[in-house]
Amino acid sequence: MIRQLRSELLPLLRVHWRLVLVVLLGVLGPLVLIAHVTEEIFDDGGYAWDRAILSWYVAHRTPELTRAAETLALLGGIRVLPVVTAAVALLLARYRSRAHAWFLIMAVAGATLLNGLAKISFQRPRPEELGAVLTEPGYSFPSGHAMANAAFGIALGLVFWKGRWGWPVMVLGVAWALAVGASRNYLGVHYPTDVMVGFLSSVAWVVGLYLVVRRRWTVLAAPDAPASPHHTTSPEGNAVVNQR
Image (tube, rainbow, N blue to C red; front, side):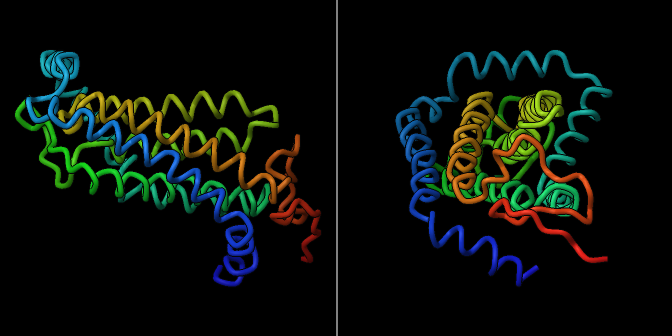
């Protein structure tokens, strides 16, 4: 793993680190700006429509829906999503290409980094006074669950985009991210604004990252990737036959 990191990911970052940094800052800058522009609004409890949506969720809670929301939050959270991402990346490296695997890892890791920087920058409190089911540590803006799961779902959709499974995977990935985001509003631990901005930020980050890394890893833009575990593709797009 360390050898592949040094031979595959580091060369890409050495060549394209400026572009990757531009994408990161291009997403982080507007996030911080939005957060500071709306600071006074959220000191007073947020937008009226934020409070109205949270109140609607509170009025329509049931034990079954609460269990479903808690399950979504668990599966999309820090305890499970990194493990799922790593497992999917290993499968991609084996059955498609290592470039696809690295792209997925970079997408989720970058979204997590952006989320942490944005939360530290603004430090918006969570809307616990509006009937939160859970008490969670950390800040509210933007939603970490929304950002990480949107990055995972959209990156996975882009991995399969050039093949016949592109649309189904993208639709499922976006639906999964929206479901996880909605669960955070249902549980009362995020304002709808947190989820919406987090989701859109991840869209911008993942698409921007894809446009950058496919310049080196051309296999990402290829119509089809190898399907056999004994016939893979290097990150640069060169065919490699694995020896048994």
